[in-house]
Length: 118
Image 1 (cartoon, one colour):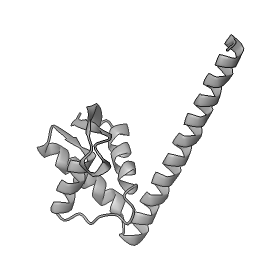
Image 2: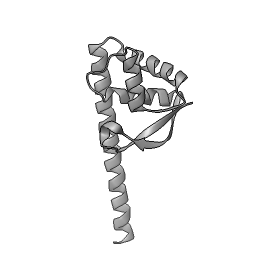
Image 3: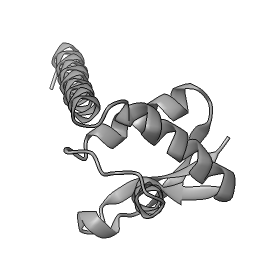
């Protein structure tokens, strides 16, 4: 492959990744909006519950945090993708940060992020 061909392939890969990221964010935001329509201010309640969970746990996966918050009474969203917006908000505000990866129990052991309290 020529250098020009390799560069075009890299650009194409980058554009594909950007498009995929946009679609993922759109799906997450749509799920978050839906959760807020079904349960008034679900996203705010979930964010506050995540912050409370962080006070008791130094490191955790989203799977563990979701189960813990649900056990404490937070209702589940109609679409699980809504959780992404909650974790993204906490990360953007500097409340949690990525600390590594672990196998997901509910995802055929695919890698998932280990979060740590910031």
